[in-house]
Image 1 (cartoon, rainbow, N blue to C red):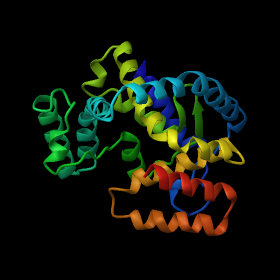
Image 2 (image 1 turned 45 degrees about the horizontal axis):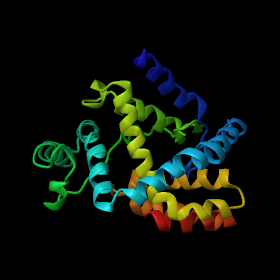
Image 3 (image 1 turned 180 degrees about the vertical axis):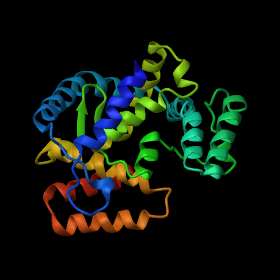
Length: 260
């Protein structure tokens, strides 16, 4: 069943996307479902985040010391290393695949199930490579923008990539509850990092557009950050701002500067 869903979603990438111009394709995302996306965004932001995620995160930050939060985040992200291995191998990136293998084996054992990032201390930092990026390297477009309940913003390609990444070992062996626990811990960690930027969203002229454009640019940055075409992304982003220097663009720049 999961494979069937993946195939359907994968094919939708080709049929639902229409390129706008010849700029960096990682910045090109259509929004044909905007009315629905906006409704979901306001439920996510005004209800679920305001009354559940944000209070939980603030409680977590207040009561769990930073060293503990780092250890928990290391534990969660250690589950991604096998997918990093496979996704790098698919692209014939042997070095990064080997680094991810070393990170997983050493951190899972000497690092006490990944709680301590021993390998990073040894000079090999974590480099996440998702199946969404693999599709991007094969020139598969982002597809339509989606605002999903609880999950938040996604491109269709990212959504498909997340499904595939979840099939790899050890994620594919976990129960629904175990996956949910890891997702909750990861969500709280990401929300904690975004707490100082809440005022930027609150002060934006259109919070939906602000979050959408910030998400698209941040995902494009992550796509290019370990690649030789990082300069291309920077030039494309400057071109976008030159052609459309709106207040939202200025707000997004401030937001991205804060989280990077």
